[in-house]
Length: 49
Image (cartoon, one colour):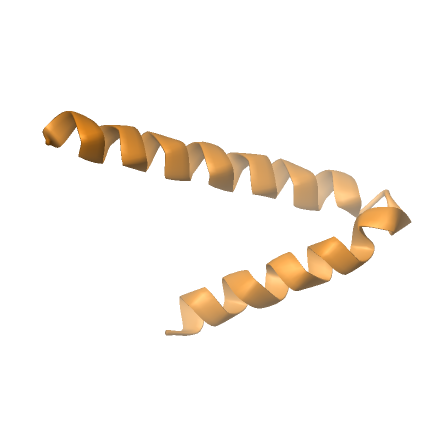
């Protein structure tokens, strides 16, 4: 059970790092701008709760 929890935390942090890198690179790529806006919105909604 502990291993599953640790694996889940690792997966979440990996996803967050990936999304963070995506947001940084998308600043230079106009094609990813809508995706960035959606990501920012969903993350903002999650943090506000």
